[in-house]
Length: 132
Image (cartoon, rainbow, N blue to C red):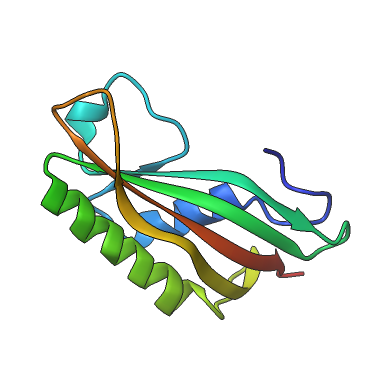
């Protein structure tokens, strides 16, 4: 889903932001055939939301964590949630100002067809606007 005119691409913002804070984790928007070799992986996808047509964006973002075990996936999902709610909320950088972050659906185990890994996902609501 493309960002509204004059707003922030929330997927790119979160991917870059999480990569800095989780250097040993692959953070991406789409999965590929190498997922098992790239664990743990965090997948960030915008799944909806709204905007004011000018600058303010209210994005709904689905964050899936893939890991070798359920415990690892749950732990990493909790870490991501803590980062989003504790550090992203109220932050600003050269790209965006994030005013609010809220949990719409907390981390929960989600089914995945590959039994060699585990998936835990959550949905967050993120209010942001461009920094300039």
